[in-house]
Every structure is written in C-alpha cells, then in structure tokens.
Image 1 (cartoon, rainbow over the protein chains, first blue to last red):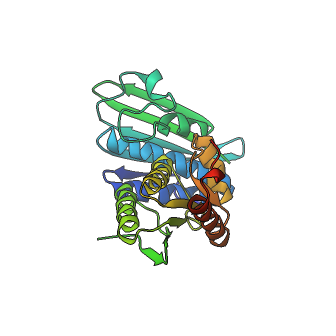
Image 2 (cartoon, helix red, strand yellow; image 1 turned 45 degrees about the horizontal axis):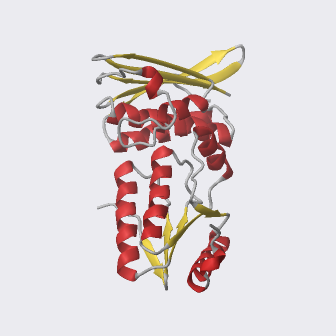
Length: 134
Length: 129
C-alpha cells in the first residue's frame, strides 16, 4: 500500500528521466499492476519524460494515485514550459518526428495507457496526462 | 565515465545491458560497439537484454541502428533475451524492430549468429532476393 498518494519529480536531465521511470515502476508495483501493465506505464512515462526534456526544455512529473469504484490507478502529468506543439495532428502521427526520436513517442504512449490527454499552447508549454487503471 | 562493457569472444562481441540506461549512455554504447567491430574485425554482435525491464523508442532505435551499422561494417547482430512484457509493450508502442535478428537466449543467439555468418561466407545463394 502506498503511503503517499501524490508527488513530484523533476525532469531536468537524462538522469531525471531514468529516475522518473524508476519512480513509476515502484508506484505501479505498489499498486499491484501486472508485469505487462507496469512495463506499459513505465515505457509510456519514459517517452513522455524524454519529450518534456528534449522538446520542452525540461519540466516536471506530477504523479497521483487514483481511487474510483474500488479500482485504483495511476495518473501521471508531464508538464513543461517549452515552445508548445504547433501542429498537434502531426505530432500525434506515428513516424513523424521533429527531433531525434523515432516519432513513436506521443502516439505510442497513447496506445500504452487507458486515458491520454494533451494540452499544448504555442509559446506556453505542453501538458500531457496519462492514466492507467489496475 | 560510465560505460557498458563489451566482451570480445573470438570473432564475436558480446554486450550485456544490465542497467537502466540514460540516452547518452545508449548512444555511447552504439559508438563503442561500432568502433569495436572495426578494431577487431568482428563478424557478429550479440546483445543480451534479459535483465532490461523496459525498452522504449530511444533504446529500440539504438538497437536497430547498431544492427544496421554493424551490417555495413561486416558484422551481424542478434538481440537476445527480451522479456515477454517488454516485447508486448514494444509492439504496442509501434516498434517491431524490422531488420533486427532476435533469439530467446544467449545460447540460441550464438547458434543463430554462427549460422548467419557461415551462410554469408560460404554461399551467396543463401540470401533470397
């Protein structure tokens, strides 16, 4: 049983991305996720944490444990104050990349979770929220 | 500097990735392996990821790139030991690693590597197309 139900982690360096993965792994284990579900959530978190670092110039991960109708889940918010995403349809397209990735980050992360929301304003930053239920 | 060790076994190179790599470390491994293939005139590279609990698009790309670079430098690459949960996640993410040879474990990987190299060396007709 997790004792705290929410927290923050910085996304300022590549090492922070590794730490974010480890934090998410630990939380999903505490929530009793299956190994496959743990791996999906950790992988989605890795993609989004890297995006916040590379494209957003760094940001923060807010995590929160959810309880609804006796179900428990994990919500992750990746927030940066970078340049934002000018063309959301393009950014969500598999295989399209503006940088050095494979272009699977956003679309791929969306497929790995139950809920996916993205809110981006050009010049103000990007916020991506994902939820996965046990 | 932090570094993933590369072991030389005759004409093969063996890499076991045992830590959660940050991106620069993955790129460093790609560089180190490319240089080691050239320096040792290696014919095969075996990458063991059996202890890796996650492969995201960056690490997936690194593996695919090593395989491609190796081929150009005359070495075949076989990726071994991927955990089922990692494989399931990778495919859902959209990465199927086309062009990357895989095997269940190191032993099978060695057999596959040997077969690929012998096939390439003795008879060009073994390659379809």
